[in-house]
Length: 72
Image (cartoon, rainbow, N blue to C red; front, side, top):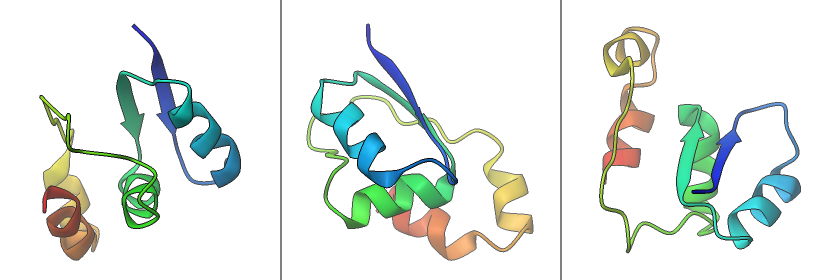
């Protein structure tokens, strides 16, 4: 299994390179995941399981729209 972490503050270009090498498990912050989805670099067509840890905290901190957009 290939696992990669995607968080703000890291290079988006490096994250895109990681995804192109066949990442099987993606761990990341809502902002970075949202960004990669918008850039169409993170593909969800083969997604089998989606887990959003501490979604309640993200909703409380103003990430409501991003959380909704990610789930879409």
